[in-house]
Image 1 (cartoon, rainbow, N blue to C red):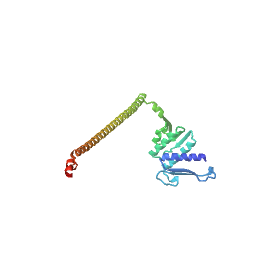
Image 2: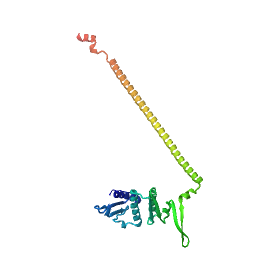
Image 3: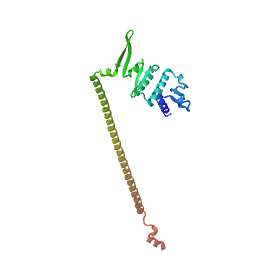
Image 4: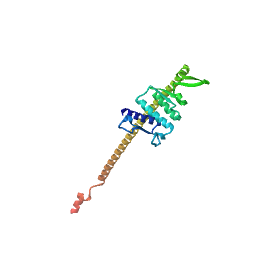
Length: 253
């Protein structure tokens, strides 16, 4: 049961990767004797609601079978695997997904694929073809892409690598220069903001000092005005007639 659960989880992961979503599952219909139980395979691509795998299209059934195959390989990989036109029902988009999966699993498994699809042939390291140069006489022709790559000009390859390296270096240098310019601009902006803040603070202090001076001048003027008023009042108030002694004497006579 532990192995079945591992295969089930791998099947879900591979299926959702190949179909870019969807829903799938593996279930045992009879759990009393797992070795004699039937396995219910559920596969529902995105946007489809179906009950059985037989309702899927040919390409979808092919990808479902490959998902189950690779799910088993993830649990117990095999050193060798042969696929006989497994990619025949697939279109170009699904062929790309199939080829990417082959590249991933080819690290631990050697695949022998019988195919007529050009996209599948492009991913192979070696090609073997059967041809009939003369009627009734078949011959095998093999091509190694490694040998083809070795026949390329080393000078051209080195020049291409050097040009690519220069492009990478130029891009990195441009990015560093732009980052430096952005840093300088940010520092200048911060300095200008600080100077503006200091200037605003100085103006505020000057305004406060001027206001204080005006207030002090107003207070001094008010005090001067009060003193002048008191002085005028004292000067205008002369001696009272009733208080004159001569008049008091005349009044008494």
